[in-house]
Image (cartoon, rainbow, N blue to C red; front, side, top):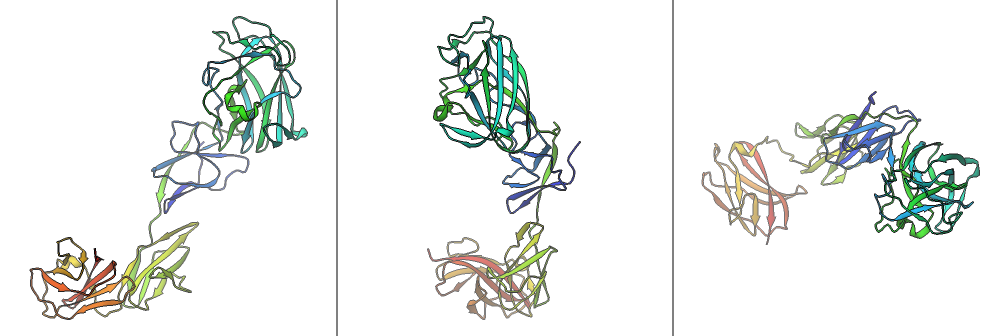
Amino acid sequence: MCIRDRSATDCNGNVQLLVSSPNSNEQYLWYNNNNDLSKPFANAATTSTSTNLENLYVGRGWDGFIGPKDNTTLSSSGGYNNWGSNYGEFIRFNTTGPIRLETTKLYTGYAGKVELELRQLSVFTDSSYSYFPSQTQKAILHVGASSPNPTPATGSSGSGTPTPFVEGDSGRIYAINMNLTQAGNYILIARCLDSATIFRNNNIATNNHPFGPTVLASITGNWAGANFEKFYYFFYNMQISTPEHEKALTKIPVILTAKPIITQIGNDSLSTTTADSYQWFINDESIAGATKSGVKITKNAMYKVSATIGTCTNYSDNKLVLITDIPQAPTKEIGLKIVSTDYIENIIKGNQFYIQFNNVKTNAIGLSIMNSSGQTVFQKDKLNNQITAQPVQVPTLTTGIYYVKVFANNKVYVQSVFVTNN
């Protein structure tokens, strides 16, 4: 059954993930694709991620395997021993929520009984740990020899030289059936109660922990203290599951939230698209009290607005607003072109540039230059009405973005340019 009422919303590059009305007893795992369920990247009804993927996937719960697949995955070295101390040798693992330990593969060199004990840790160091006795669970496995050539241990309680691994031992699957009802850190101990011997890897040359999806559950270490990466103890290809789980994933398209759009109303007002809340800015500084969908224009300046819908806040592009009774028109109407002295378009270098236009029907043609704060820094009252380029001399301006305004045809045409003195 697919998960309903779920969404993935890209808010300024931060993709917000949501399962509406989630069941508090269930875990929701998120994936980048639907062909590898071993690698969820999040486990939550509400979370976020950074991605440029068009689709994400979410599933209810998890059922899979953690730990090395077999005893040759990490190393070809290791042996069987009669691990039987009261303290117990173990693997250590973490879970972020309730899970069930279903099964595991053991390699046994000699038949007998193996006791499993699950302890929830309260404190753990490389040399000692403490745990909650009330959370302890135990089970006894009656194991046969998976080795084709069963050999008794050379010592008891882990003493003696381990008997070497026997080629052809493919291990056997045993049920664990232990429920972990809450998130936490745990150890799973194995003790050989009589003649049984079980295999562990040693002389592992690479660091491999943690094993498993860390957002759900993973094996993080073992009995060997600070040298734990050199060993792997007993429990191979361990199957775990959440109380509720399903294999099918739900595909969720990533929705891009649109930037708010500023619309000028008459000569004195701006408005923007519908949202839950707003904040207006002038020259990138917030306007006190300007928290409605509209704002009054107070001066020539760059205006923008932030619009919030739910938890997503988006910002509009800056909009240059001019207080004038003259209507603003698109520059393509007169083919307006501004180039530097070395003919780079929309660049002013030093104290001169060229301007070119056509389709101007009035003789009176004026020009002014405004900085990004809306202040006029240069003005020329008369340009020649000609279709060829004409030079314009300007004072030295600070490097940055400016706006060239051309007054013609009883309209104003505005072109942004970059000024540099290099």
